Length: 177
Image (cartoon, rainbow, N blue to C red; front, side, top):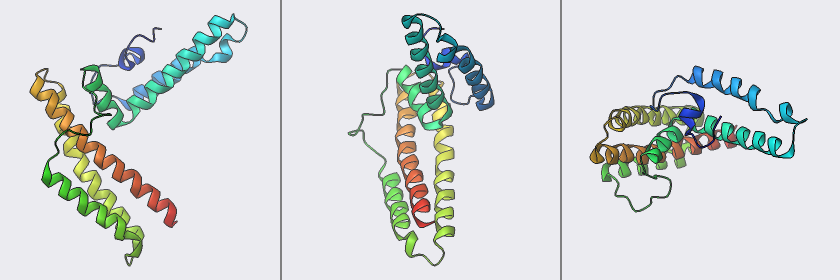
C-alpha cells in the first residue's frame, strides 16, 4: 500500500469516470479490513500512525471516487486542472439563465400548492440536466488534448452548479418535512 498512489491506483481501479461502484465498495471493505487501526494496536507507535494515515487516505479516496462530481474533479486534478478554486472561468450565459430559473423555482417551492411534488419535479429536472453533462465530461476527459480537457472542466463547472442546487433541494425537503 502506498499513499503516494492516486485514489484509482490505491483501489486498483482504472482511471476513468465510469467506474464500477460495486467493485469500489468491495475493494473498500477489503482494504478497510487490512488497514483498520485495531489490527495494529499491538504494534509500534509508528506502525499505528501509518495505519491511521492509510485509513484516512482510504476513506478520502472512497468518498472521492464514490461521488460522480468529486470523481470528475479528481480526474481533472490528475490532469493538472483544479475546478475547486476557479471563480473567474467564463460560464455559458444560457446555462446561467437556466440556473436562475431553477433557483427561482426552488425559492417558490414552499409556497407551491404541492411543495413535495414541486421539489421532486425540480430534482428530476436537475438530474436530466446533469446526465448530458456527465456524458460530455466522459467523452472529453478521455481525449488528452488541451481543448478537450478544458471542455471537460467546463462540464464539471456546470455539474458543480447542479450539484449545489441538488443539495439545496434536499435541505429544503428536510426543512419542509
